[in-house]
Image 1 (tube, rainbow, N blue to C red):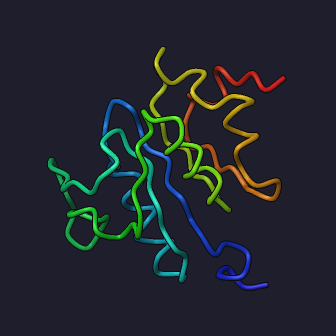
Image 2: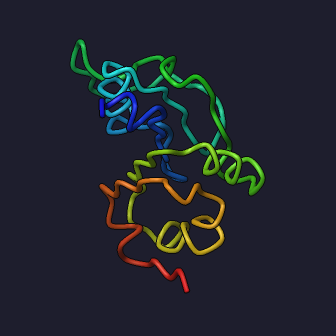
Image 3: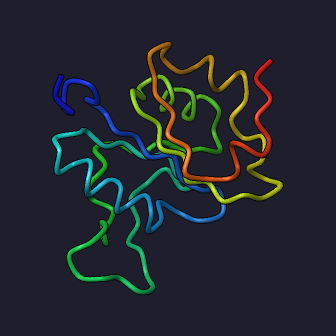
Length: 130
């Protein structure tokens, strides 16, 4: 298997408090380099430039890497996003707003074969599937 065969989509799941942030943009850039298709779920549901410190040659400064954006505040959009995920990278911040953001309903919306990569404390802290 090649990375492209195993991971035809790399999807980025972003924070409700932030946008498609620095971590997500760097993951998107690296995944794209391996031929992955990138989609993103953000609070706004649209591409936005990012500010702050940006190291030249890293990330996705203008938010142009994802081929589609989904709005996390709208259940239908969030579930459409999750249904497309082959690989879900969760980098949500740990907060009261995110501690149970992914639950049984969200995991049910995902493919049975989806892989969840959790780089956040938010999922581990409050996950209640069953």
